[in-house]
Length: 415
Image 1 (cartoon, one colour):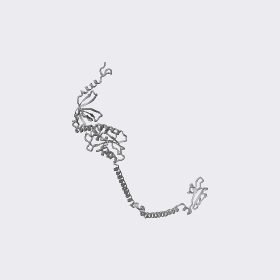
Image 2 (tube, one colour):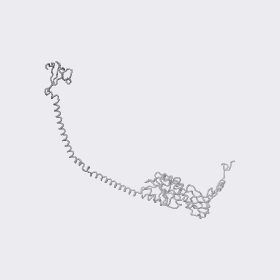
Image 3 (spheres, one colour):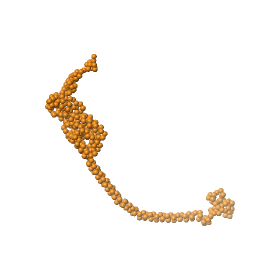
Image 4 (cartoon, one colour):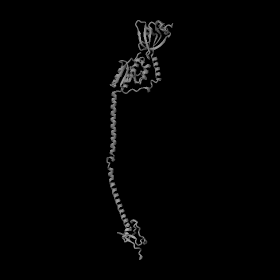
């Protein structure tokens, strides 16, 4: 037969299981636990108070029980959202099958301790590079839709929407109202942040809350919220508290605004200011254009006033007489040269006529050439000796006014 509780044939009764679980939990001893009070129930006339202690960084909680006097006489007024440290012993109630922590001491977490913890978290996030300015995403100049996470009907919501709408009337908002303090703030803000980041129409997200104490602003220094802000792909503007307040989400966000009003001024441009700037730029550009035209007109007037452009033919007129005088001189010199050369040519022609064969022929001389049928007229040899013209030789005799042909009768012996 199997051991009790190890098979369906030999099961343990409920009382056996509950008793054994209670014995195991009873061995744990006492423990100190820190968290935020999520629920507080102090019934009138009941000696026992019931609390729920929540972990602000995770969706986990513990049920607490304690004497009613311990809550009434606590060092600070206990309420939902208060951060406390409790000392208690785990217990398992066999009658109801429930677990709770039986508290014997409750202490409030002091401001100094909270600030020290925030500083340790700040150094951790800084070491991981979550504050690096190179990771900051630029804020769009004119976003289509602005995501706004803030408390319901809060002054921060009114300030952001009123100021932004006054600066740019066409601005659109996607508002997510969440708790901004207390035990549920971190979870609601992270959920709203994820929803707005996933919305493709949202171009920038504003996380806004008014001022408050260190305890009130504690959710905005929560590690879970800081990492959620750093993980967003949409630019995030942190506008939490007033100027002196500096929660950790200010350092993780892409832009820190001193107040919600400052965030509204940074997220959209001022339409009136932009119009004034456009008008000023138009006026300045028109003035600059007019000044440029005046400068260029002055340059053109200066060029036109110069003599070469004012009277372009003046230089030609001044040189016209000189040109005419030079032409007359050149024509006279050329005429004189032609006349001198003509005279020289006449002299040369006269000398040539005197020395040429025609003049000799005119004086009664003749040129006798031997006529040979095999030779042309130009190649006929000139008769230079009587031996070259024996009897019967045909001869051509050229005189001043023509030429005659004759036949030689031989040498003249009488000569």
